[in-house]
Length: 116
Image (tube, rainbow, N blue to C red; front, side, top):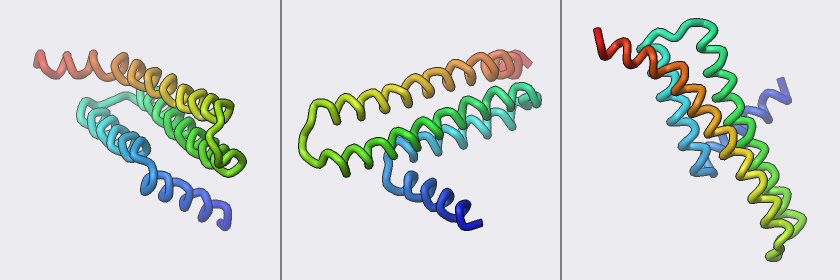
């Protein structure tokens, strides 16, 4: 239980301190709402949850790497900048993949609901 407390604290701190994490939180809630509204199947929820979790993991790792980089290299450094940019790029790749998954899963159902 001790580790769970630290993990939950990390998520809460991330959401409090990182604008992008708040955007991911809102996006996650919108995706859950849309999925519930259009009636995703279990297999579709599996893909959606994997994509959403991937974005959150990438954001957590990115923010961790940023903090560690700031700790070991408080001065301006091209190498530190590259490390941060690479980690941010990983979040971008995951976010794009999550959007693609959402569109592939949700759009057919949304279009079908619009036609009814």
